[in-house]
Every structure is written in structure tokens, then in C-alpha cells.
Amino acid sequence: MTIWAPGLAAGVAAAAGLCAYGVFDPNAPLFGSVIGRGPGAGASIYLTFDDGPNPTATERILDILSSEGIPATFFQVGRHVARYPQVAHMVADRGQEIGNHTQNHHKLYAKGPRFIERELVEAHEAIAASTGAAIRSFRAPHGLRNPFVHSIARRMKYDVFGWTLGVWDTDRPGVEEIRRRVRVGLRPGAIVLLHDGDGYDPVGDRTQTAAALLPILRDARDNGYSRGASRVTRKARRIVRVSLVVVGGIVAGFVLVRFPWHATLAALVGASLPLLLAALAVNLLSLVAKGWAWNLLLRRRAPNRWIVAQEANLIGCAANSLSVSLVGEAARVNHLVSRDRVPLEIAMASIVWARAVEALGLALFLLAAPIFLPLPAILHGIHLGTGIVFGAVLAIVWTGRWLKFSSIIPMRARSVVATMASIGSPRSLVLPTLLALANWAAQWGTYHLTLLALHVPTSLASSFTALVLCNVGGVARLTPGNVGITQAAMVIALLPFGISPTHAVAAGLALQGLQIIPVLVLAAATVGWQVLSTPAWLRRGPTRTASEPAVTSRTD
Image (cartoon, rainbow, N blue to C red):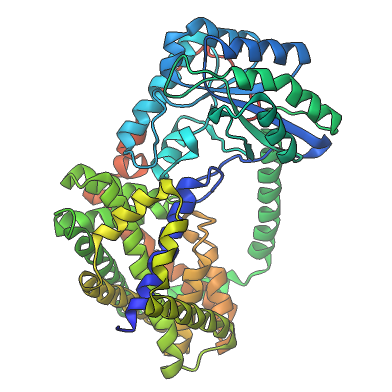
């Protein structure tokens, strides 16, 4: 067993776990914002019904809600709406909110952008035509999502909803059991998932849910809960956003006023142009290494051209520089699928493998660095954590206990894991791992050359520390291109080496200029700025009329 085997297992496990979390957790924010809980003020709860309209259950549920004065949101399936337009219209006529639940209730996590867009647009148009309602909410069937889902939902101006409490009423366990499951699971602010229809059967039996609704409402009242509406949820979200903007504005204003920007500008103006050009060239080499590793990972299952993988990687990096989510991963996959006809599931699984191999390369750097470099205390904890993970995975792999983990993988995730497992064997991952190391070495060189270009008294240890902290700090992608995050990370990384914040911020600005601007220019030259700023699968939106009513939303 070579030393990279346990690290590879750790990287793949972490990347697969992260991917599975984003896909299968209905409230996971990995691919974009999700409303999974409403405000708990006043012990409010929020009722939602999926998979309707239904010829028997929907009207009974509406009658109960109307008699009790309870608002709810109905996430409707487009083809059911087309079959029962009068029932769908009745939901809107009773003043209840209607959300989009796709046209045919397909599981979207393994679907491509065109398929997902068609599902959402067709459902939107069917619901709007039958009800006249403004559709502003979306919930994915079974809560299963991928980055394309959120990209398209944003384009359609949808709020994406998950849920807090699902009680599996679709199993028809009995009226009293449905009632009990809701009663024991209620919490303040809970978004409750119930079903007034069957996503796959337009006449599916949901009479148990309808019969359980009135007892559920009475139990909630007896326990001090009150009704809630999603406009409250949106108001709370707006308050949070405005608060963050205000706080961020105050901090930014303080920095703008008090920070010695004249010294930073002077450092940038006095930078060595030859060294900056050398840093630019080395940074582009890191992108080539990353794209090449991805190309090799795909070859075993899906033939693809080296140049197309490079283009896709470049486009993905550019898209990530313009966004605060994982849109770049969706852009990479979309370009590869459209140009080389790579199967979508394999392309998505290869992205996970590529990130796992990159993580392995960084882990190997972190483990080896203290042998050669005097690192500051701030990296000791990261190094120790990496060593513990490596040791634990080594023990698991060495003893063969990892085989027992397959039994605890959720059934829905096993097909994803099987696809990932089919992409590469340990032997086929050697070259991608070496290219990942080359990628990190090139990035390290970019940091070091940038610091030298600004005449910063740097060392290999200081540039390595800056590389690690900037990449760790940028994982959350809180700002487009991590602008501001990189500068803050540079200050923290370089202070232990006696480098002033002025020079650290200047280095961060120069570094981002090298990493972002050339990539945007090259990507725009490859596919055009129009495509880069608005991906092809997002250009068409649902048809809306000028008379469409304003947003009056309730909670999911």
C-alpha cells in the first residue's frame, strides 16, 4: 500500500459525503439557498402539501384549511394540474399559495440542465394557465437536487424550499399514525411536509392525510402552536440580508477610511512586471494541470478530448469567479456534456473525484511541509488534523473495515457511489494525483512570485502559509471570486512572518488580479461573454404576462 492510498480514500470519502449531503439533504445549502425552516416566533408552524392536485384529497384539505383559517402552500405537479385544472384553480381561489413541483415529478439530481429547465418551465406554464397564480416557490421532488436545479430556480426567480418535518404519509400508515408522527415531531418554525396527491399516480389515494389534517391542527393548537405563512419567512430572510449588508457596509466603510490605501497602491505600482508575468504563467500552468487531471479521470468511463476538458475547466473557474455558489461546477459539466457527449452522471461523478484528488494533493503538501519548512502555529492544528484523518483512514483501509460502511449508505445514494467507484482504480488515479501535486506546486509558485514581485521579504514558509489559509478561507465562497476573503486571509497568514497588512493586502489584490482577470478573458474568448455571464441552460425563462399578480407567498 502506498502512502497516497489512504489519503485518496479520505479525499474521496469526504468529497462523496459532501456531494451526497448536497444532493440528498433537502435543506443542504451546498448548491444554493434553501428555506428549510420558518421563523419560530409565536410558536408558528408552516403547512405544505406536495404532489397534487388530487381529485379527492385536495378539496377535502382545502375545506378544512378554509374552515380553520389556516394558510398553506401546495407544490403542484404540472401534469396533474393539466388533468385537474378546476381543482388546481380551487387552491388559488381559496387564497392558498401554489408552488412548482416540476411537470412529471422526476428525480432531478442526475438530470441535466435542459431536462430540468423543461420540467420547471412546463410546470410553471401549466400552473399559471390553470390558476392565474404567480409562482414564486419551488420544491424538488423528494428534495433531490444538483447545482443545475438551483441555477435554473434562480433564473426563474424562485425561492427553493426544503422541509423541517416529513412524516412519510405517502406510505399510508393510518390516520392516527400520521397524526402521531406530526405531533411528536413539531417544533417552533417547522415546515411540515404532507401530501395531497401522488407524484406518479394522478388518482393516488391520499384520503388518510386529508382525514388526519383536522386532528393535526387541533393537536398543534393544544400544544400552543399557531399558523404561519411564508411571507413571514421571506421577511425574516430580508431582515437577515439587510442586517448583513449593513454590518458589512459598516466594516467596509471603516476599512476604507482607516486603512492606508495609499501605501497599498504604492506597493502595487512599484511591483516587478517580469515577476508578475512569471506568476501569471505559473498560475495558468496550475489550471492546465487541474484540467488534465480531470481529463484522465474521465477517460476510463467516457472518452473525452483534452482540449475540451481544458475549456470546461477554464469556463468553470471563470463562472466561480462571478458567483458565490457552485455554479462553476455546473458550467464545467454542461460544457463537457454538450461538447463531448459525456454521460451526465459520469461527468458529475468525475467532478467529485477531481476535487478528491485535489484534496489529496493538498493533504500530502500539509503532511510533508513541516519536514522542510518552519511553519507558524496557525498551521499546526491543520497539520495535526490532517495527520489524524490520514491515520484513521489508513487504519480503516489496512484492516478492510471500510467494506462495512456500504451497508449504512442510503439506498438513494448507492447509485451515485457505484458510478463514482466505476470511474477509477487506484492505479488509474496515480497520474491525476501527480497532476494535483503539480497544480498545488504551481499555485504555491504563483503566491511566492507574487510576493516577490511586490518586494515583500518573503520565504517559502510564508508563501506556503498564505496558500493554505487563502484556500481554506475561500471554501465557503462568501463573495464572488472570494474578493475580500483572500485579502483577509493573506493578512492573517503573513502577520506571523512580520509582513505588514499593507503589503499583505497589496499581495492579495495582485494575486486575485492574476487569478481572475486572465481566466475571465480566456473563458470569454473561448465561449463568448454572453454565454459566460448567462449559461445556455439559463437563457430562457418561463413565460409571464404583465398582468401576472404580485408576489403573495406563503411558506413552504
